[in-house]
Structures are given as structure tokens and as C-alpha cells.
Amino acid sequence: MNFFTRLIGYSVLLLLVFLVATLGAESWLRQQTQRLRAEAIEAKRAQFTAIARAITPPNQHWQAADGERLGAMTGGKVSLYGDFVPAPPLDPASLYFDQKLAELPLAPVTARVVFPASLISRLLVTYQRVTVGLMFFGFTLLAIGIFFAALNWRSSSSGSNSPIARNSSRAEFGSLAHLAETSVAQTAALTHERDVRRLAEEDARLQQRLLNQSLEGKVRLGHDLHDSIIQSLYACGLTIESARTLAQSDPVESDRRLGQCVQNLNATIRDVRAYITGLAPENLRQAGFARAVESLIDELRAGRDVNFDLKIDEDATAMLTPQQSTETLQVAGEAISNSLRHGGASLVNVRLHKSDREVCLLVQDNGTGFDPARQDGTGHGLGNMQARAGRIGASVRIESQPAAGTRVILTLPLRQTA
Image 1 (cartoon, rainbow, N blue to C red):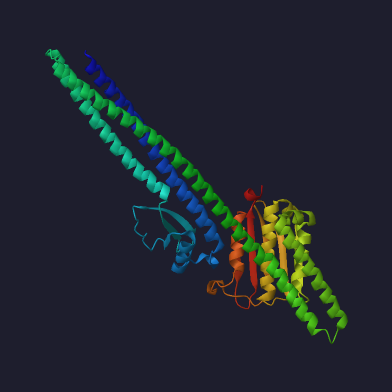
Image 2: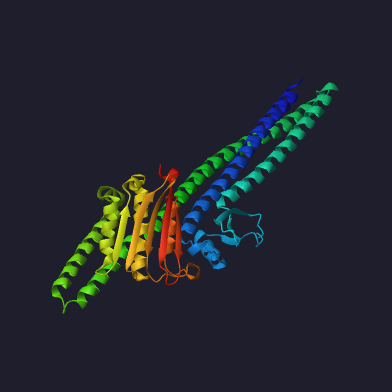
């Protein structure tokens, strides 16, 4: 075997190493593409679930307009379909997932969320195609090297050792050496670009997590402001209104109600500070659930002639975690406020008890009632109660009829409170 044949063999070996490295890079890129797509879908699903909980309509009666709102907030296209509505067609270039929004007996609703693939995902797909092209190029060079090796072997076997043959061999060797240098440079560039892409992927995932945390925090803050601070300020306004009415006929009672209003405002200021410092669940634990409900009733009564029948089972409160106690108290406050503001009730019953399988909160009044099926969804109270129940693994059922009062029932399974 002459010198030129050995050089061709070494070149073929280098080409084989290049092909193996290219195959490994292509397999790694395929795995990264699949993983990136799966992470993008899961991140978008978590964002969609948080938004859907925040804007859930009463009784989960989803309409096409709700799908458009969800699509605008999630940055994609949301289509609603069920057993009687066919699923929408899919775009192969986009990512999608299906999420159930309601489990109604006659009309189950499923949302299909379609959103464009991220820039990183498209770059990975493009890079896979480039890698396949490089593999094809490498196989072509390998075939050419094997051909020249066979040709040189046949030439050497025929005894061609003339100076012309040696010069031709040197020229071919120079070409193969240049080809080997080009292959090494391409491999180094591929490694560098892979590292840069990995850093970009990590930064994109971090930004997505921060965005989801910010969105969840804003939704939770909106619920807390509506169910606690706004209700307290509304009660103070009613107290001031009743005190102004009594200013001439009963100054003593008017002064007493104004003093109560000042106390309620100070308590509201403390609540705002507690929310800011994150101490609201701790304050509830120190005061006790029953005492917190009594304070809430005193604040929402606002001088009105309303009777409250309060029965709190201490064993039931012991089964609640701090987060469940906070959310249950907020649901009770929203239900009591609705009974006084909208129902005009003169008697409100509040019960908290437990059974072998669940802890149950009941708020029942003798107010004017309403038809739950005819709610237009302009208010946030019912939706906030549903969202709060969902955060602690509970369910809310609202029973009401015109002129027949209202019952709000919050049920927490014991397996969730353990």
C-alpha cells in the first residue's frame, strides 16, 4: 500500500468520524425540538388554565365570545367545541392542545388552543434540515473517497510509479486535506451554535416562568381586592349614609355608627398592610376562624337591621389549612355581602361543619333571590368564588330562585384538607 492510498484511508476515516458526529447532533437536535415543543405547550396550558379560572362565566356557560377573550389574553386562537360541535381544523405549522372547560351533562365544552411555534423551535427545525444536508454531503464525500481509494489501488497494482502519477497523487492529497480542514471547521461552528442556542432556550424558559408567576399574582390580587377591601369600603359607605340620616333625630346613635365606621376603616388599612406584607393568613390563624367571621359580619352589617345565625364547628376549622381558611372566609364574605347588597335579606344563616368525607360551608338568606341561569356575567363576585374554590380543590354550588332566597354551599373534600 503506497503513501497516497494511506492518505485516502485516513481521509475516509475522518469523514466517518464527521458523519458519526453529525448523526449524534441530529439526534440531539430532534430530542431538543420535541422537548422544547412539549415545554411550550405545558407553559401555554398553565397560562390558559389560570386565565380561564379567572374569567369563568356563571354556571360555566361558555360562549364563542368567551373563546375570543381567552384567545386574546393567551396570545393564540381559542376554539370551543363539544359533542355536538366538531373540532376545528389544525394548522400543521402551529402548536396546540385541548383543555376541558366544563363537564355539563348535556353540553361538555372543550377548548382547543392553537398558537404559533416559538422562534427557538423554528430555528431547531431549520437546523435539523441543515444537519440532514450535511449528512448527505458527508456520505457523498465518503463515496468519492472510497472510489478514489479503489482507483488508486488499481493504479498502484498496475505499477504506475511515474513522476506524473506522483504529482497527480500529491494534488489529490492537497484537495482531500483541504476538505478535511473544512469538515473540522464546520464541526466547531456547529458546537458553538449549539451552545448559544442552549443558553437562549434557558433564558426563554426563565422569562416564561416569570410571566406566568406575574399573571397568577395579578389574578389573585384582583380577587383579594374585590372580596375583602372593596366589601369593607362598601360597608363603611353604608354606615356613613345611615349615620348621616340619624344625625338630626338620634345624634348619639349617629356618633356611635361613625365611630364604628372609623374602626372599620382602620381595620381595612391593617388588612391592606397585611396583604402587602403577606401576613393575612397568619392573622386569620391567630384570631380564629369563628372570630374572623364575626368580625366580618359586624363590618358588613353597616347598621342595618339584620339577624345572623352563626354556627361554626371548631373540629371543622381544625381540618382547614391556612390557605383554605383564608379562601373559605373570603367566599363567606362575598356570599354575605351579596345577601345584604343584592338580596336585601333580613336573616342570614352561616354554618361550617364536617362529615366523614368533607368540610362544608353554608350561607343561606331569606332575600329576594335570583335566577342563576339568567345572570349576564357583568359582576365578579360569583366568578371570584368559583376561582377561590378551585385554588383549594373545593366546589361551589349556588341555589336560588326569585323571591325564595339564596343558598351558597362550599364543599372541601377531606383528602384535600389532610
